[in-house]
Length: 220
Image (cartoon, rainbow, N blue to C red):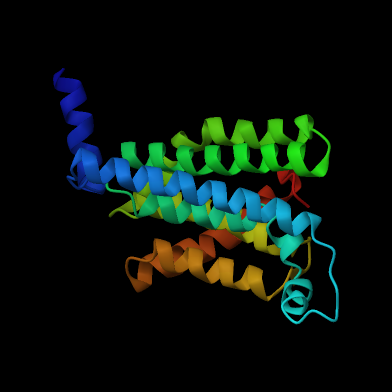
């Protein structure tokens, strides 16, 4: 019991959880779940839409390639990072992130079966796997906003993954995927920001780590 208390005290020194009422926490989690459902439906709808150049609001969607953008992992990593970091505690971060991915995956899967006429089981199993592991990763993201060397190391790891999601990296080159991916990268840095020294450390460390992890990255 004493050892548990000591670990808790050490973690609280990194970042201390905020106290929120159960009612407020439940409403927040439910809102995130509904938000996930809405994004899951929108993502699949963008996949199915047939663009018509004569329709004005179709043009920006086609130019920005939003269908492929929301099918890529980068935007989902950013949203999960934001949900985790801005949760009141590491436990709430895990619950909220799981609720987000659960809502998104179920909605996307159901929409595909009902309106696209096929069942993408093998593809969805990947995302259901991400959903199951998301609470553990969310806890790490929550502590990445804390103080000390541990959050800096966690921040480097997070920015390395974000870098791999937003840039095409080779041995002697770095290529930008598009303006929306630049926004993801900048937004991720803003979410993790605590002070200038910390920001420089996680950006440089994350960039160098991305080159090391690039051969293992499955989303090239």
